[in-house]
Length: 513
Length: 115
Image 1 (cartoon, one colour):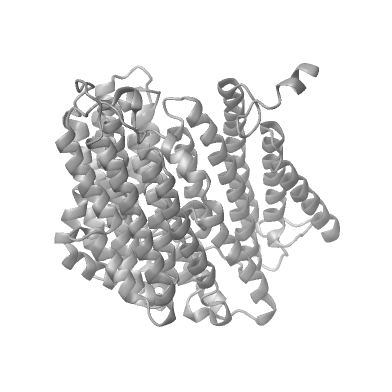
Image 2 (image 1 turned 90 degrees about the vertical axis):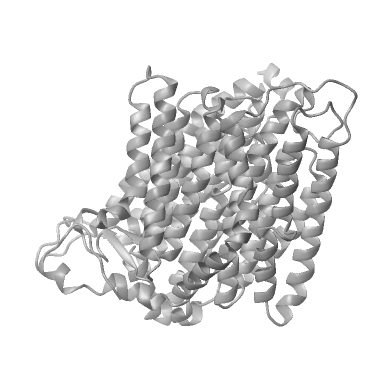
């Protein structure tokens, strides 16, 4: 049962290699392998969430090397939740790609599985250098997936994306070097306990390393001065890839939450909350500019990319708010916004297909073949993202607004609400152009088909579904926030050796706090 | 030793950053490579610079910290793969967009003819 913790990494790795191993194997084999593995991953992730929901922090020591010396995979409520979110999103992206997009270039499924391995690894790892390694795994897979199918727009935005992320990786390594040099460890729990007892002569070094890490993570999550790569890259990517990329910015946000709640939490004295002012102002500025970006978008894909930025701004602002309530609110908001924006990318691709030359550009064109169905999905998806009741976006935003206190409200409320209004304006302009302002003419273009329909429906269906399930879900996110707000339990679980481990080293260690 | 090491790392980083900010893909690729060299050297020095000792922890003997060496090996392998990828990508960009400017603009055609 303990080996379950490493399955989210091993399963995609094996599946990815199995699809890559022979070039001549048929499409059918690759598709069934990929969808099967991803479906299995959903089951594994659900089991992990079930395991984590009792509040125990478990870890898996790779090779039997106990922490703080070996690399460990840690399962707590947050990592389990993120792995489940990733696998659900990935399953529907994979099903969508099986409708034909995977054959536009080579090795789609292999790369897709390796990307999943990188994302899951980044969520599960308890070692900071290992986090870097998994970041690189997910990045190199994403570089190739972004350029899947080729084309000018993809190569050009791909070049920017690759160059920026390579520079980001260098910064990450510098920060890791400084942290190892001053603290002498790379295990996150061990680092946290050493930062708590750090002498004043070394706080400056650790602080600079922490802020370098913040820069890297805000580059991944696309905060204001570092987001200009995102709209072009996501708009150019193939739909199934762009939808999966909806989780990529959240990997950055996860890393911020993990590192800054654990390493630089309340125990770290003068280093505590050093990220908060940067995240607060950066998040608000991202939110404001992304809302303006939504209004300026001339293409539905660009519009959805800016919607992702709006959600990133909201999440980063909420990360900087003190207290467990804002953490619980942002985790709920993160789940719904990831799924629904992913679904909107898929919808943009279907709309593109049925409009011939006009594509997904917001211009007058011939009518859509399935206009009422697509229009309904568009309405639900956009209302979900913009935060209109009765959909889940409204609940998420209301929880975040409620968790702000005092003078924070003065900034957050107007910017978040006016930002929401801008999204509604942009979405209703796009929607009315797509579905109502059309030329005379016969609708043509392919129907969306079962696979694409199922994937899009399931992801956009998250908007109403998550508002029905809001009760149990907010209960889970609240206990997650409590777990995050009390990092000493994390340290105890990992750094206190149990009698069993001392007497007889086993490959997997399970410790109850 | 330390001063020389720090100066070399610093100069490599400065050159790397300067080249990364250039407008054409080739200098950018070279800049990223230099930056990764600098980072590898920096990581390597993080266990403290020791000479003449093994990396084997033996009782009583002074030893060199083995972990940064393992980290650098990992970083080199990853950096190598990324450089290979970005070189191919730069060539592909040149082919697809007909220009080696990072923005893909063809403003530099006359200069190419002069060469």
